[in-house]
Length: 253
Length: 252
Image (cartoon, rainbow over all chains, first blue to last red):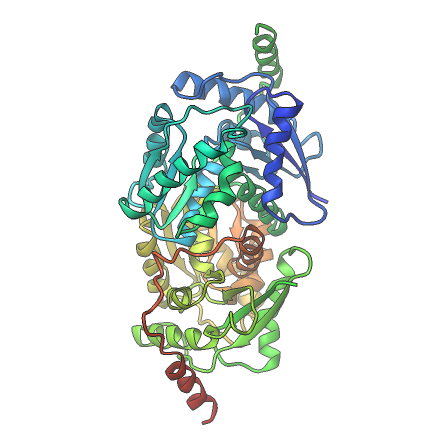
């Protein structure tokens, strides 16, 4: 009976969490798998600058810090930015799955080159940075934005008629002009468009949230977790400090 | 119920096929999924030259060609060489899982660099081929061989005391000297050593066969398959000719 903690990277209310939780409708999970969604207490408001990335790293880290003690079998981070993943891996032994790097790696099991479909233009520098950092420049055909401001709470709801065809047109440019063999949705917030796009694109579409659930199950099914050599444990854990500063930041809102 | 065809890359009797099938015990699978292990008819004696690679590609293509028509939902190829994978992907719409690339890419989900531990150095070209195709040469810390003769029928049975400690020693050197974060077993025929190694090494050890079964399961549940732009469909498939090759060998 694997229990998986899914960390939402914004301090969402119940309705916001429910929109995120609907991602599990895209995939058949194992019968015993239980997903527990938990929003962070504190995060960035926008997501477009190194300042924002750092705020989200901290918020996700705090939300997952105690996952192993609480009895969870794995952690999934509900953002393509993999925010907080590296720090969580350094203190947890259970698998911690971020859909960002994992979906780019998974895309390479399906085809030679992938494109990332990004939300708006301010999101582009970060994708380009991580693709360089991961060493995937040769495998990435392009990162293109469909130039619609993200709504981290309502996602694409109510904007389907306008947004979905725009997303499709940009994804088609990735395929036809950039030579993408696979399209990666650039955000877990785009999951509502996944079926629409998958039905219309001539190449596979990777929907990062549902993939991350399946990868968490896969790691658990094989007894695999991240390497301690790549994610060394700190000599001194500072859980109280982390909880203190995140609590203070959340109370300051 | 989803059905997966596992293509075993050598002709073999039922007893030895069972040793391949034992890989299923190393992974917890999703509900209601069935795996059928089928040996090829056309095969080289082993995988140590370009002749062997060519015959392996042909044999596996022949064995999997009708998988979709036969009602299978996915195909796994039971060799880390991923032989036949590209050709099968070009003619099938169902997922075709090659454990080599899937093991390497999964290793990179768990650490920055991986090493491949194999039985003998004659297998090295199997890995350099896939690394070159993926363009991920820089992510491979090392390929190290144990200098032991593999047996693709008996696997490691009866040789545990001789083989397991040597593999552990080689893998330890990958971690300590080459800085591997993750170890990938270089052959599905090494699966019997996985548990021994995983219990003794300080890094994750990927068992490529069982991983491929679980990833076939995942691909089915995610309704994802390979890209037809990377693996384009032939204009003129030679299905009858390929079937005739198989029949020629079987009838001999």
